[in-house]
Length: 446
Image 1 (tube, helix red, strand yellow):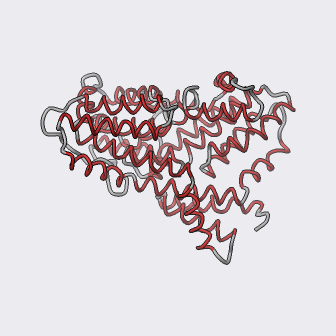
Image 2: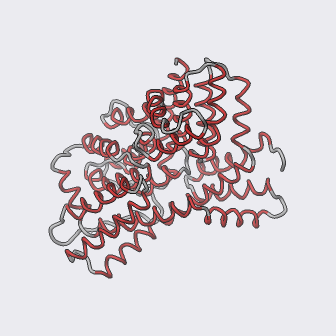
Image 3: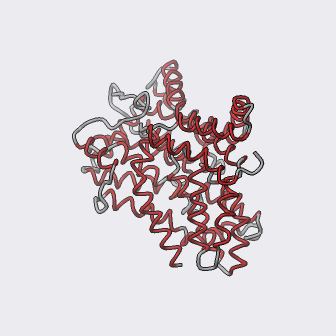
């Protein structure tokens, strides 16, 4: 298929329709990929699909993700079975005495762990489950807060992986001089309206100023009745485990502090951070004899196995991205809105169109690499402030990461809180749309 035109939307529409209908994530993604390759190579669909799977699994980025997510599963499981997670919850219980304070504590913890969206989602989600359960907070509400303090917060902090990546793109495309990427990025932060709106909406939801809406209300009502809101296939990622003896808070602090420190030490590389933290944790627990050698490795393997559903969804979402790239979906959307571009409309159209691309493709950093070289020169030609244009593009990627049903941040936030990814995506959708509407209005006014 040389030029699919509007038909390039078909695979993504198949995924969205099936996902909303089935409330599942993996199967609709597989269907979308197969439909896409049926359009691309009608006579050799299965061969093309398998080739895509092999190509994705051989990609360096995917290998990095697989290793990082797997090792984080191992580390989380070890912390739970060492009594560290139980001790952490026990300490927080003394300060957190209500549902509202539990939610606000989750939000603040998410603001503190801003280095990387993967690190944020997995760490905060895993750490706060026990505490929020005690105060009858639904896992869906927890997942929403965890996800909202992942990518939306990471783009607002210039020391995160997102900021490092976009700053490099700004320098590579001549928007900023050598070594000036960070300065240019920081100048655009006040115009990153979507992540600002999304982040500020969380405390309003946590404090009850903005009520639970739609499916989220159903989940919250269920939690209030004391019923389980875990919806992940296979149940909880980390099984309920009561540590025998006196739980030691250092069994939580040392692994998490090591994870944060070494992620920063190795240039904001979560894979190196979690690898170093895992080694330190194994040695630390071994010295204490809190777990035997065999127990530590058995629990580590259980943690890795618990991450397999999330890994499968991420792999297939990358395959869908390849399908959309082949069908030139991004080009279709950009070319469709180009005739409507003007100085007054560019920020809002840019945010809306690129947010649609990011949502549909599940590609956020890839969207930045494609869109920035197109949009920034166009904005300069029309006389739009570059900081405003950068803010609109970055906001669109943050929206996509937050809203996409099969985006990696959505999947990992759901996995960390034991919620089916589609259940998480649909329950948080009203709040995402509220923040997006505020951002769109803001860009139109600016």
